[in-house]
Length: 174
Image (cartoon, rainbow, N blue to C red; front, side, top):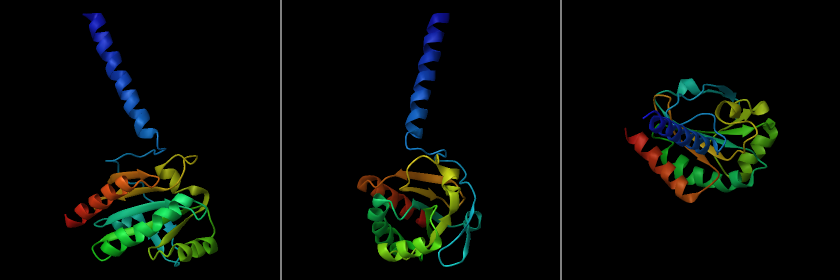
């Protein structure tokens, strides 16, 4: 009986360890269901953005950088398929630019043709609230109206992107 319980316990423990490794394999230190870590950032237009001030709205944080090719690929899709469709429906989209000066941020915005704001993230401190600092960027965090994380992406995968779009649309209808 004791051996059987030991085997069951070890099996459950190993399964939990595998699930934890899978969740962490993308470098996130937050998970779906967590309260989104609060932060304040300066936007490229000079305004100040504070995440906790966005309660009651759906928020999309897009972690990015001008030197990131995948980010540049994804940004026009965010602009046309998410931001332009939902900006007047209670959606907030903010690109969090990793550790670059304001001039680079403004040039990056022009080059990608986006109209949603970009925020400065000196030292990748905001990024570090959501993912391991050594982890790559190109990630999106979707936060519901109560401030809970409800969707996480990594890199640009069309299927995952479309699922994220559907989740955003559903949240905006609630």
